[in-house]
Amino acid sequence: MANMAKLLEVRGLRTSFATAAGLVRAVDGVSWDVHPGETVALVGESGCGKSVSALSVMRLIDPPAGRIEDGAILYKGQDLLSLSEQEMRQVRGREIGMVFQEPMTSLNPVVTIGRQLTEGLELHVKMDSAAARTRAIELLGMVGIPDGERRLSQYPHQFSGGMRQRMMIAMALACRPSLILADEPTTALDVTIQAQILELLRDLSRRFGVAMLIITHNLGVVARYADRVNVMYAGRIIERAAAAALYARPRHPYTLGLLRSVPRLDQPTRERLLPIEGQPPDLTRLPPGCAFAPRCAFRVARCDAEAPSLNEVDGAEHLAACWESSRLAGGARA
Ligand SMILES: Nc1ncnc2c1ncn2[C@@H]1O[C@H](COP(=O)(O)OP(=O)(O)OP(=O)(O)O)[C@@H](O)[C@H]1O
Ligand SMILES: [Mg+2]
Image (cartoon, rainbow, N blue to C red):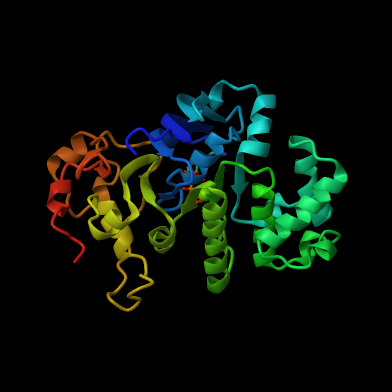
């Protein structure tokens, strides 16, 4: 396993936005990767840079305000940042699929379900219209939408919220991508539908060997569906571990706080939920030290002076960016 090729490797990514209030450092020198077939999560509070990370991979950061300033995004070994816009369109259509939180903003309300599905197949994999239609019906079946033949002539508003999200997944899968970026794919849905959609994503990922990046603020989702987890805070990754290790032995106080602030599916009434006090920092004025220090119960003088880098805390698979992570080593969660 040691040398398993990476499907996607983000290295030192820096993405910022010029705003009236100053330069927003949305993603500030971040590295993470995804292996073939693996499900990786990107977790953190609102505004920490999760969506900007995914949009950067897809090169969907709008200039001139938004800019990828530095880094590399290696997909199957090739840097996406060096591709032409036309080559990038092929990557978006065929190689990497995307599922967003709110399907209605990505589905065209005046185009039939069938047309939206067949368009990409005709454009990117050069299917003729009959083959694309057959594949579209097959795709609807794969995502659990029966009666595909009839559904093809319907419009998005004739679908329920859960069905629209299934439709988005069908579109993302249409050209057999190697990777799907799912940005909060279920937050707009009610709880039972959320679980169904996540289970669908997991089944499809296993059946077709598609790797997934799941973006969520919900650690409950992460525990059940991800292999590895990257925890983000203020544009940086502050902890990375296998999902089970992150749950059992979080080594960054922020992760600990996140775990205490979400209900656990297995023990819903185990403890009182403790929200993390305070607010994330202003991304135009990041402090010189650790960005989490002002909210941190483990803070020491060094935390304000010097930002800790992401270091091994328990072998090469568990990293944390915290000067005091050894104080959390003994299972601070209990
Ligand atoms: N187009 C933009 N112009 C200016 N600032 C932006 C723009 N897009 C994102 N940002 C800022 O970048 C930061 C990261 O945003 P991002 O959307 O990645 O957060 P997120 O982690 O996805 O949050 P959420 O959980 O709310 O979706 C935020 O401070 C946001 O305000
Ligand atoms: Mg987001």
